[in-house]
Length: 130
Image (cartoon, rainbow, N blue to C red; front, side):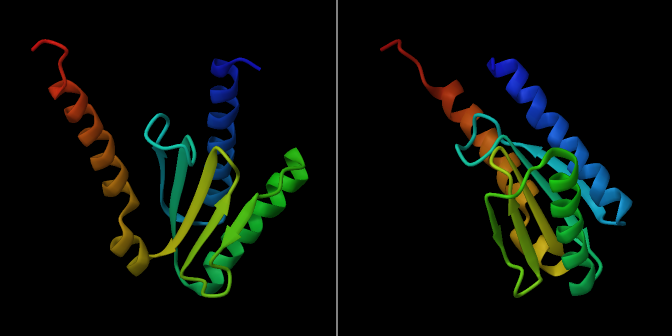
């Protein structure tokens, strides 16, 4: 599969996850493109849950729908015990479900947007001219 087609597949998966989360009333759903910024993934999906029961139901629904529709299971799941931040790792798409306080504390949107900006600024400052 060529790189362009693979990125389209990942984007489609991210969009489907966003739709699932929206249908289950997740709040402030955002997709962060981290392609080229990290080897971890190409997209992070970030969403907020109302409470611990809601965060678990969001995670369960994403897992259920992706298994049902694409026969796709997460490679790894973190945080199900604490239910304050649940991470579902689908390889090139990582889903981060937060309670509001944790989302504000970790602020992945700022972390990754700053990271991208810093990389661009560092590269702009580099030169081969001596």
